[in-house]
Image (tube, rainbow, N blue to C red):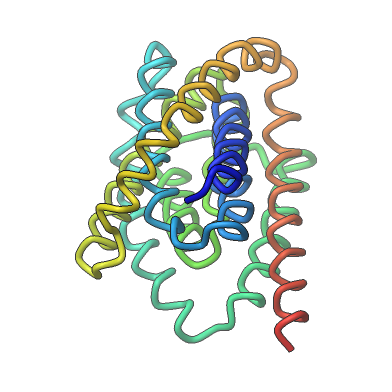
Length: 244
């Protein structure tokens, strides 16, 4: 990784971690497309490794709001969802999946704004975990289902609980990549070099989250869920068109 590549990756990780530290998700959605464009060898293992650092940092920073009793229920859905997502990508082209998921996120957000009043309980958490595991593994759009369930919760509760769940899925991801031989010591070393970007992004978000929390948090997380889903869908359609 030369200096220019490092600086681009540093900026991408800094931006992504700042976003997730503010609204609870979005690190991989923001950083992965940029990093993969300039240094594809770092994706996905290095991105996931940095995500573990970020999730741990946010979980500890906002631990006073952590809803630990929610985690097992969401995990019940996350694990089989991840397996289902891995299978789905073998039978359905990725671009179709991403567009379908983006459309689903937009519909869910529209319903939650108008009629659907979701709150975290064992049923919604299992379903959201299942959707998050499936969508995250198949398309990288894993945050919105859980965010929609937590949209009415206090900011520290949303961020710390989602961080705990993302830490769980990240550990599962690193384990799976290690078994497959896709997570290398080189990626681990490069992740260590980019860790200052994670710390800086988390520090920035400690300030920005205070401004967003309260009446602005729900509009912020729902808006970002829609925008990020549209971005990833548009990027995937562009790549598919360019490939042909």
